[in-house]
Length: 250
Length: 309
Image 1 (cartoon, rainbow over the protein chains, first blue to last red):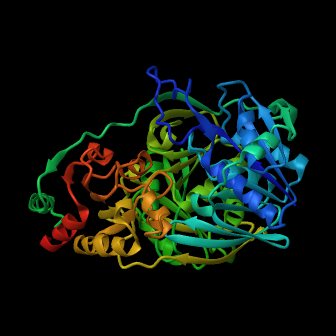
Image 2: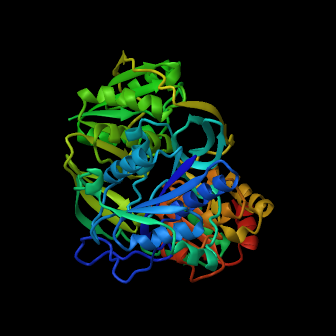
Image 3: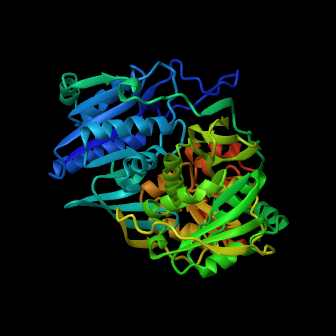
């Protein structure tokens, strides 16, 4: 079985995003960029399935600027076998619906048994691509996965839902989206980073797949969230108890 | 505008998150509530009483028992022929179903809507709530998920909508519900709790977390939450996690104990009405958002506080 893993190049999760003063977006100039953390978990899960013998080949795919090649090389260094970059102009934002359409076309070509996506990208926080891709493929979806077990021609997915966990069994091919606790991604070793440089990486464009990436949503403004101002510090528990009583909580 | 709202329910009653979605939908136009379930007469009757709901559509079929997206999305897509917008609460069910609907309608969904600024203009959080984007949709129809804490809850009673039965294509045969482990707790759910007591990594281990946090929560009748660090360290199960990647909460009072206040945690609780923080580090970022702060050793202060309440 082949596994397709979409990955996105995003602002590193340790960097505090700064909104541009003209309100046009978030300043990404000279900011450290990395693979979306949920996508790292997806790559890791695919590698583990391959190590268990449930998968034979892992194809990483990214829709992004030329620099997203670095993100794909990271996936290759972790253990993916080959990569496809669907390249767009630097700075172009491709919305989840268009990404899902491109991935649908890639999936039609590659015919994977599983597509494992991160549940959301930490930049636009949309949480849509996996579900949209499953819809366009007419296949089932196991979102927010905390466990993935391939059983013959089905995959059993434990999902993190409000209040606990839910388990579903999906007919393959299927789309799975990862939640945080699915696994802890490995670090690529130096020899594997070197090896990744010679793994195949194909470069395509959205036009190659006949997908129009014109945004449907127009961003009118991007602003900092309202700032909460610091309140008071109380000297001891008695003062805190008095405050709680004032508020009618205690 | 005719708006179809996804009702989150357990077949017998309607979940609170639905009420905020009804409020949001009401700002767009006429509200119809969709109750898809199995043996869901109770939920349909409850939905009909929500203030602002004009009509209830009830789709009662074994295929809809567990809200499997593969089964309910085609039902919603078929119904959307008569509606201009689909609104779902941004719960785990809503987030699972809505994008599937959007893709089938060829609509770019607007996720986690915080406010409705015009018929096609919305604000939504990006970058873990660090940047609020105002977006305008150019699609013919709208698909939205709305953040429950950003809209007032519609009154659960007072309405008297008619209930109309609808049917869909049933089971798509792609997915099966195997089971669920929903944590049962005497304490209020995080989503609806008026008071929440949360603990962080400073609580040391699972036993200490229980010994320190739970008695205070019990005294206050509070729900219990945790930071991602505490969850990752295994002090409490993952459904306790408050934050951008966990639950987004906005109680009357949020008590953060031994939580430093990482961006990802603040994104999940900064809309709380009053924030109280207890932390030994007086420079911890949590104090920048706290209304009332108490600096000191939580292992001494929290038991003292519990004892004096």
